[in-house]
Amino acid sequence: MTTTAPAFGTRLAAAVADRGPLCAGIDPHPRLLESWGLDVTPAGLERFARTAAEALGSTCAVVKPQSAFFERFGSAGVATLERTIADLRAGGAQVLLDVKRGDIGSTSQAYADAYLDPSSPLACDAITASPYLGFGSLRPMVETAERFGAGLFVLALTSNPEAATVQAAQRRGRSVAAEVLDELRVLNAGAEPLGSFGAVVGATIAGVDAAAGESLAINGPLLAPGVGAQGGTAADVQRIFGDEVGHVLPSSSREVLAAGPDPRALADAARRFNDTFRAAWS
Ligand SMILES: O=c1ccn([C@@H]2O[C@H](COP(=O)(O)O)[C@@H](O)[C@H]2O)c(=O)[nH]1
View 1 (cartoon, rainbow, N blue to C red):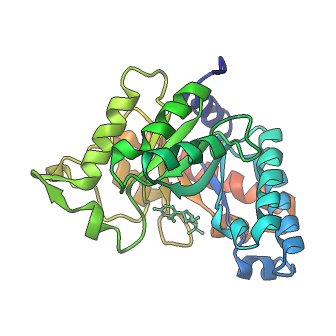
View 2 (cartoon, rainbow, N blue to C red):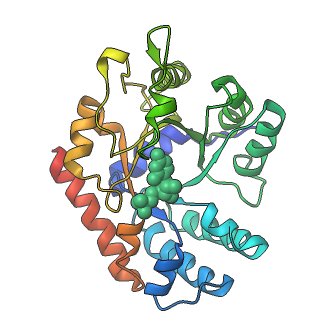
């Protein structure tokens, strides 16, 4: 069965126009649970994640739960992740699950079935994917996303300080990251208003190296993690993305979540982020 619903890129563009560009992360760090007065237990995780989902799912265009913080609690954590995804979707947010999957083709298909097939209990709108087993190994995820109107965000220039050792490496005069961006540009060619295949480009990177051909114009969304706790600002995002800033989803987890546990304070923090980005880019 395939879907007749609008493609992820189309849904995302409409949601951003309505609610703003912020992608709020749900990262239930132990320290955040404690600062909300919760125990670092499956029950504390459930309270934290579902409070955040209630507040952010009806406020933000896109919300990004970080799978690792759920998985660390085992099956109880994964069950909470399923309920969190359902809550976010009920609130009208696009759900981008940060799982950074990538493997040989047959296993990639299993990941695609787990996260992108709407009949799966963990189905979401999009996931993050790692191309470092070769971009072609993501083909099953690309095809499954196309079939069901879902999206992928592929790691290109990540926000961590170690990233350049791999992503800036050159082959035939082009960086690894530039080649990832090329592949995404091909997948999104002709899509309107926006393709469904995004790139992850950190809000903390020093800059895009035009000499290495790293054009960010991929006709797809650009997820920019690293805003807030990792030091990235609205001005950094403007500088890094330049003319492509209109396609950027600035992403922040700890900085937004620190406003909890009051759901109204969380929603207000997300609105302030959106106002800041809109003002900086207008
Ligand atoms: O390049 C990347 C890719 C993903 N992430 C993820 O985003 C959040 C960032 O959390 P903050 O609390 O806003 O720092 C986290 O889930 C990372 O795994 C990233 O930071 N950089």
